[in-house]
Amino acid sequence: FSYVEECDVTALEELRGQLNSNRGDKPKLTLLPLLITAICKTLPDFPMINARYDDEAGVVTRYGSVHLGMAAQTASGLMVPVIRDAQGRNLWQLAAEISRLAEAAREGKATSGELTGSTITITSLGPKGGVATTPVINRPEVCIIGPNRIVERPMFVTDASGTERIEKRKTMNISMSCDHRVVDGWDAASFAQDLKTLIEAPALILAG
Image (cartoon, rainbow, N blue to C red; front, side, top):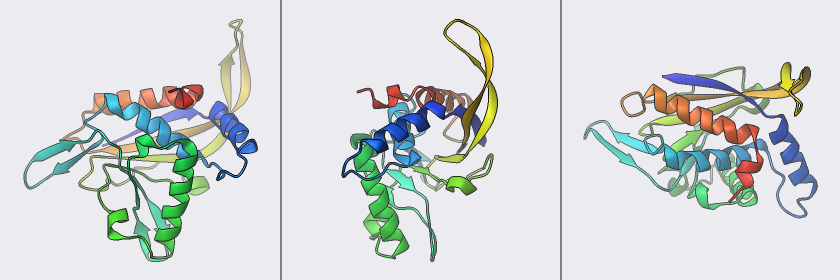
């Protein structure tokens, strides 16, 4: 089944801009390292999502470490290089590893070890990401997450005084597909809501 949640990414994009303007010689941040960090912070409360399901044996294996597959389009088709222990990397380390793996995949130099062993996958088409998607699960994983493109929309915003006004905000849908044999709809929705909380209050993403 698939589940889609709308997120206000205005503050997240502002944070990304601030980090990039003071990055020095560090790699430039795309949205992906921030999303991956938010996912890694959310997953410990939902171990059934960071898991693999062996159909033949009927065995579910849950993982503490997040070995995050990153779907990448190449001239040879779709490949999914793996960011090992993503939960232990900071934003800049994630950005560097994303760049390294994407380049290795595009040039056909990714090793078999870099293309296997993922426990959950993120797939993004960037500005071509559409309004919502139903991403196909990267078996034997049980969940795949697909951020969609960012669009600007007028939204009702309540300020500190309780006054409501219309403001231009940046929004992005998070689409996810789950294997219902392992992941219940309630758990997927709860995971998405907790992820939304981090995305909309990005200071929490950087909190220890």
